[in-house]
Image (tube, rainbow, N blue to C red; front, top):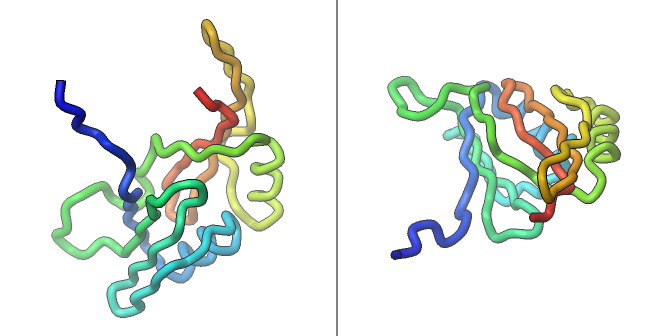
Length: 129
């Protein structure tokens, strides 16, 4: 079978307010901003441990894609999600699901969720496999 997915290029999300989003991704999450285009209200952040980037921009009228605040299913990793969530809160971020132990056949890991100022929700886990 032909391999269709060969890696992760970028995570792209729509936002409402570039100033608030840049502060969240840069100051709260500590991601390194690689590029900002004020006219397009578009910023690009590095995603640690990968060559992929997180791209965000204000959704233009008529643009296709998910509305701001509807992204879900993106999972970040951290060896201690509870400590990561505590730091997110300390930096002014919103944790939407407190760290929880998940047990499945052959797997035990911790999972939590947080949201950006628009309500786009991301998971964070210590799961490695």
